[in-house]
Amino acid sequence: MPTLPLPWVLGALVCVAPQEAPAEAPPAALELLDHARLAGELKALAAAHPELVELQKLGESRGGRALEALRLAGKGAAEDPARPAILLVANVDGARVYASAVALQHARALAEGYASDAKVQALLDTTTVFVVPRANPDAAEARFATPRIEQRASGTGVDDDRDGRTGEDPLADLDGDGLVTWIRVKDPDGEWREDPTDARALVKAERVKGEAGVWRLWPEGRDLDKDERVAEDAPLDARVDRNFPAGWEAHAKEAGLFPTDEPETRALCDFVLGHPELALVVLYDAEDTLVAEIKGVSEEPSARPGGGRRGSIAQEGVLESDAKLLGELGKRYRKATGVAVKSEGNVEGGFARWCYEHRGLPVLATALWDVPLEEKKDDKKPEKKEGGEKAGEGAEAPKEGAAGKAEEEPPKEPAGGAERKGREGTDAKKDPKKDDEPKPSDDAKRLKWIDAAGPDEAWRFRPWTPFEHPELGPVEIGGLVPFARLEPPAGESGALAAKHLEWFLTLGALLPRVSLAECTRERLGEGLWRVTAVLQNDAYLPLQARAARRAEAMRPAKVTLRLPEAGQRLGGPAHELVEDLPGSGGRAELTWLVSGPEAMEIAVHVETQNAGTVRETAVLKSEVKK
Image 1 (cartoon, rainbow, N blue to C red):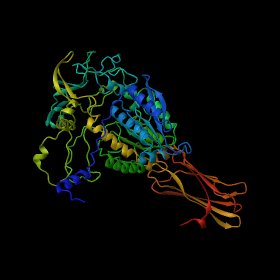
Image 2 (cartoon, one colour; image 1 turned 180 degrees about the vertical axis):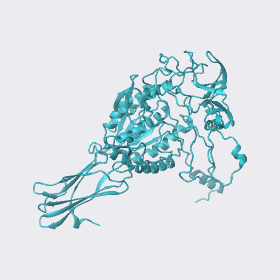
Image 3 (cartoon, rainbow, N blue to C red; image 1 turned 30 degrees about the vertical axis):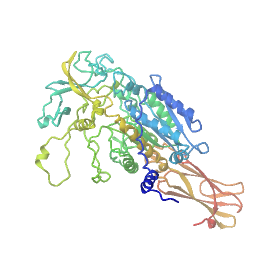
Image 4 (cartoon, rainbow, N blue to C red; image 1 turned 90 degrees about the vertical axis):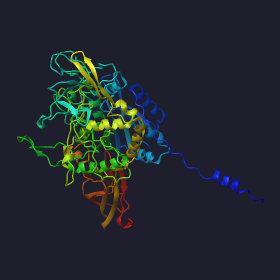
């Protein structure tokens, strides 16, 4: 064989050398859909996967928009209707349309990935998943209208300023830029002043510290009733996310006329109450149970003021044992997703609180995203240990009331401003000069992030611009724009959703699942037997959360001994109820004394609402392999 020239050999080696795999493309940005397109997507998904996906209508909004859910279930769902289920709800707060997109992405990934993805199969073959991607369709539709407003109210309006008229001073786009932002007016009686670290942000003036107010702050709008208050009376006031029975605030305009007065609220309550197989609720919205520390309250009822018929009442808050479980799940969530957004959602009349207090369901709630307050850490630096991270301490951002307008009282924090709160370090030695340096407010930190993010993110803040207001005269219009704090950058939206999907796929393993670790019979004498059954729950969550046991909202596990006609139960109840079965290997042992022939079949049947159904035949204890 002739010898090949060396250059040719080297060239051939180069040609056959293994090529590096191309870098995986980042997930595509999520598209925000209006109601019509979202409804079409849900319908198409159910039609494309009829054996796996079912589209269900839960109710209808005041605006005539359907509130819909997808039910996704794989093999075995029909055989065991008591197998545990997860409910994923998004966009109860009408402005959080991005959360709706994430929920839809999850549903699509489950339906399309079932045939090929082992993790999806493992979830749907053991767990039923319900997805409600948009729980507040009327308020969410404002995201796709012009001018753009963060709409939160969709229900009954009231006379906010008590002048005998309703809805005469709504929010309005005065400068015609297509956005409803903020108005600041020079006023020596104002409550706000410029942040000393960034004049674009406003902070509350602390007069006790000698700080004088300079500005009065209003949402963008008119003063048509000439009461020297701007945009204080919108046509709509009641909010779906404030209308649930738990912690409902009587006489609060956002809370509605009575609990469940809003059609969406009532539909969600009916759905949850009508599905006893639910074992866990996941909420992508304004509420939070996964990032901020949850301080549990005593599980003992507190004394009722003045005595009363029963003399005690249940304490408000998450019970201690449930708080510990949520604390651990929060650590896992933060590690899996990297999210550290502390929510500013209101828990009074909220969906998460109602699910926990009235139905006893654990709720994993997250706000998904907010403009970061802290600079990105250097990857080379060691990360802080779990529990040491901080994610946006400080005053709340302004919350809009009816139809996206501000509350009657001035907001605690303006868009483009935040109440300044000093933060003390933990070092023993402090530099007095540094203590005297002004500390940036939360909104000053947000503006710093926006500046650093480049021109693609500059839309989030409108510079304060002089404007001649029809009633107020010279003012400035600007501040953080609608949805600036709710929607992540396009380049991050898909990746953030993908991280949450990976986390969501792990949740099925947490749900309580009852098994019979032992089902034996032992001969005590001629025709006399002792039957032993040991229930076990190897999952993380208990059979019932402590709140469920307190509210008596769920039936305990029902254990039934089944004998043929030839058998007779001599000791032990025919039906045993097991209420407390902890997770992580929690056990409960039951015994019976029975008589009958050796050949008779003795069976133990376990029935639950949300942890499956089990039936085992008792075997001789001597035959059980140890």
